[in-house]
Amino acid sequence: MTDVADAVLTPRAEQTRAAIVAAALDLYRERGYDAATMRMIAERAGVSTGNAYYYFGSKEELIQEFYSRNQAEHLAACREVLATETDLTARLRGTVRALIAVMAPYHEFAATLYKYAAEPASPLSPFSPQSSPARQASIALYREVVEGSKARMGADVRERLPELLWLYSLGITLYWVHDRSAGCERTYQLIDATVEVVGQLVSASRLPVLRKALSDLLRVVDLLSP
Image 1: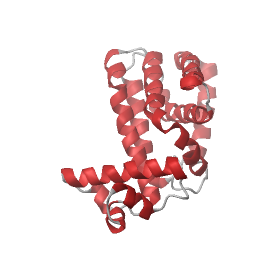
Image 2: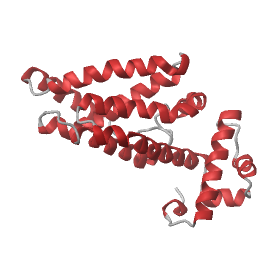
Image 3: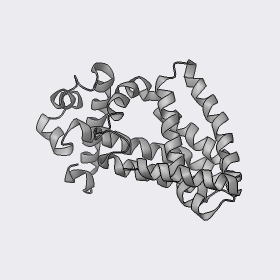
């Protein structure tokens, strides 16, 4: 990613970056990711192509910026439930429901995006090095979900649960991408049903029989982690 992303930007520069990102997302929805070029994005944003490349070195960097902004919106949308709920199931339900609500405007575009994100070598993959900032921010959010709850669990489960919840949220997101029900109601139903199961598993995680199963699951996660 370009050094500009890490610099302290003036309000005008930040406005220009936001306009470029908005133009890119509009064109990705209208024409598809492949067809939208940096020149077209610059024209839609009202800047020169060189200026667009100054802020973003590639279309992939624009998607990474989308990931970051989406994550920031998700964090803001979770604030109320995380400030008022101490039950783990309620905190998780509110957080994952907020994720789907934040992503709702990009539902049609998400199908195209996930086609590229599903490729193991793609920089757009949620497991890629390029996606690490957004991935780590999301895991940190689920750590807050866990740490702010009154749920009792072993130290090993508490340490690794945020990553497992992030993987769970990816599964929910994948279902949402393909959900064509009105208002994606089936996705919300899936969230409500599965968070109850997650809460029950966490509550039972101190039992010896389940502790071994969780240890085996964590070993699998270690094998799959980037």
